Length: 353
Image (cartoon, rainbow, N blue to C red; front, top):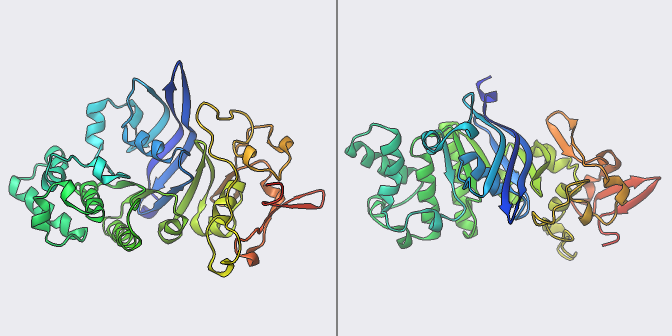
């Protein structure tokens, strides 16, 4: 089926940054695919490698201090073999990106219309008048009132929500089949967030693009995504269809993330906090389970070997050697519902913490 067509395939991707005299992987052996008209969400705490994965796909790393290995296959080509000129043919035209901070991503010295026109000049043969009309149409599409006036303004003259809409217009200007949205609602108020997400969804339905949505907001994921990949310390630790992931999470990290969501029916209870922090690249554990130091209720012997991704059901993969020992009690509504069974002894996530 056309809907099942794979647009982008990432195979065994490593992105390592040079720190002093050595390289440390921020993205470690990641494999993913994105299908046409699909929204693939990538979630995880700050520092898990989500944005690094996105910029690796876009070829936006400095080769002097970054080493990228593996494959990023688009239209039968490995993008990692392209030079800068070859990548410029891809950026904007084939893969558009909505950056996390539009104020720093937009050029402060260029008017809005000039920045939207830039990709059209490079990738199309439109006349000046055609480009102008295309800019106006894009600004209307992303819900900007007084679009002719906004087209003549500079980024600093716009609100945060307006700047984010301009970023979306730039990403959509050449109608790319793939869009990467890196935290598109960061620092926006709740009302504007909802408008931006509704806009992304409606535009995706219109142009049938595949979208990689990077976020730490699980509410956004539940509303928008078709599939979810959970990243921790540079690795994919779980990937599944969105309903399967929310109803039957398997990795302890995924469960901890879901357990951290405030529940209206449990307002009197203390909010769940994941113990510890994401390890730095230099201190990152290279053997065993990387999440093990943050799981006080599982024996350390369970994590001596580095776990591989296991398929636990159709399309549901988890990087955990003891996933079979967990059971899920949906009646408790994400309130200490995740248990570990060993020798008929149950340990809750909060024990030992």
